[in-house]
Length: 219
Image 1 (cartoon, rainbow, N blue to C red):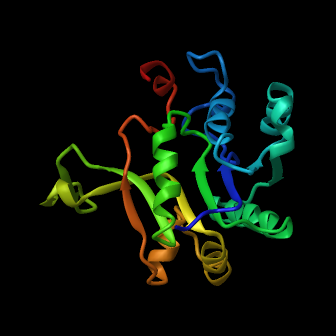
Image 2 (image 1 turned 90 degrees about the horizontal axis):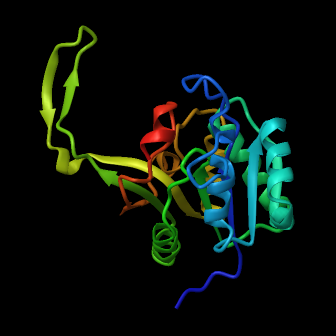
């Protein structure tokens, strides 16, 4: 049975929150804790180290609100794109000795369930890459640039990608090096591009990414 000696996570926190209107990661949830604080705490029980590409305001907030956990948290410079931020995190992990597997998660997804993280780690005993997501519940339409509907897709085949996405560390680091001049919006897409199988792990629709202010009140 495969076992992992070291598990790391990269939690991306370098976005500008343009659609939200302020830094959504610093907003408080109903539990009284900030979005980013809640997200980090979900991963602490599973990881030896958490690497966070972020702005200084996020770093200052984490340092002041989570002093007891700073021995497991490393901050790195955020990139101009999400891909660059993740790559910075991967290089930091490599420089500190690497790990067996790495989980990559959006800082703005604080509602991730522990069971989903556990299942992601378990599936990485079989696959080099795992992408958490949920199958579409709405009917999916394809339109042209004028807004005319071209066709309807079978929603049972539409898998809406979420995070965490988990990877064999060497595999995802190599993918980032090979594709550093591209601009992928998620890391599993990089493995797909290189022809490496990625397992689609069904999670929960509650694992929503906070994008708008109403997302804080609805959930």
